[in-house]
Each structure stands twice: as C-alpha cells, then as structure tokens.
Length: 307
Image (cartoon, rainbow, N blue to C red; front, side):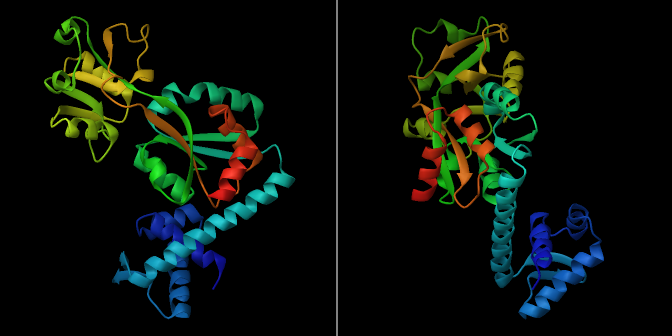
C-alpha cells in the first residue's frame, strides 16, 4: 500500500467518481489513476468502487470505510506538512476560509484587511456557500476555518467558538403597507410574500422553528444565499425581505425601508469552526483572534485539548 494510492482513491471519491477530473487535479493520467486504484484493490482483496465496464458507478460497503480512512490519512499528512512549514517557512502559507455570503460581505472585511496587513505573504482564499456547505468544507479539510451560523456547531469533529450574535430585520420598498403597522407580529409577516435566505426554511433552523411553533406557514416566494440578491428582488416588488440586520445599510440601501424584527426571533450566534484534529499554524490563530478578540491562541489551544 502506497500513500499515492490512497491519495488517488480520496481524489476520485471527492470528484464524484470522475477519474478524468481526479487525474487533472493530481497532474497525472487517467489510466495511471485507474491502475493504481486496481493495484490497491488487489492488495486489499476487495473492491473499493463499483464498476460498469470501465466506468465507476458507486462505492462498495468496505470501499466507503477505505475512503474515509484515506481522507483521514490525507488530513494527517497536511497537518505534518504544516508543522514543517510552521518552523521552516514562518512567513508564508495559505489560509482558506469557508463562510456564508452575509458574513463575507458584512462581517469579515475588517478582519481580512487587518490580517493581510499583518501577514502580507499569506495567500488568503474565501469560499462562499450555505452553512451546510461551510461545514462540509471544514469537515473535508478544504477549508481551514469555517464561519457560519447554526449548522456548523452540529458536528462533533468541529470545534466551534462563538464569535458574535446577530438578529434580523425586514426590508421593503418605501411606502409599503407594513410600514404603517403600529407593531409587527409573526402573523403580519406571514401575510406577505417573503424573500429570504435559501437555508432559512430548509429544515429545523431557528427562523423556520419560530414560524412553525406559532402555527404559521410563511409565504416564501423566492430564496437566495446572497443578501444583496434578496434586496434586489425586494426592490422589484416581489415581497418583503427577511435578512440579517448587518445586511442593511441606510445609505447603500436608500431605496428600501427597514423594520427591526429582533423582538420576534431569538438572536443567532455565528460560530468560528476548525477541525479538532487539524494542526493550526500561528497565523490561523491570528485570524481567529481578529474575528473573535475574546479568544487568544491559548484559549483556542485549551479548547482543542479539551474537545
């Protein structure tokens, strides 16, 4: 068994069984990948992948276990490499952050600017997605740090640190009837078409639970992951927008009115998440402290040891 064979298995599984794509990522040939996987299967005495002719069509039961273990090996190798970089290449490296659009657009800029000034030679990459996608990227090792609300705290393998709390507001065009209401209620919100985040009503999230517990079925007519997209469609008259308060700016969104609805929903907590088994370089701790100043390196190291 060779390390590169495990890497090939891992990359093929990661690329949805597409050997050609995996070969491109690995900078090798498709026949080479297929041959090495076959050699590994022969050595183990089992099939990792199900085949239809030469095409991979699925993963066998023992294959799923092998793939999971191969992924762990890849993460451990990355951690070992980081140890070397930490002591041999102190000023260089990469940092990949996975987060939602709202956090990337409205909360991260100050921390990112300060980090780049502090570590100009570190290559910083930001991936945007839903909270579930953020969690998956941290779990798989694609992202070093995940920043999201709710779902990222549901994984035992991820250490989550609370960064800050936020609540919601509704935005609407000037002159909207809702602006004439003396008080806002869930019933009144539910009586209008709603444009909101696509993950707000896809499961047992805080917003969906609040409406459900009140016995209400909101009329969600459009969803998006991007608060700016939501506000664009609100401007077109498709409905009222239910967004994070941080996503509304009085000057930038001068064409929209805003009403606070924090009395209708409990505050949400945005978490900073890292894999518990990952080796974190010093500059990663620096970024986390910029985003959550109440946690320093010692606090995070202590939390990792206790997790």
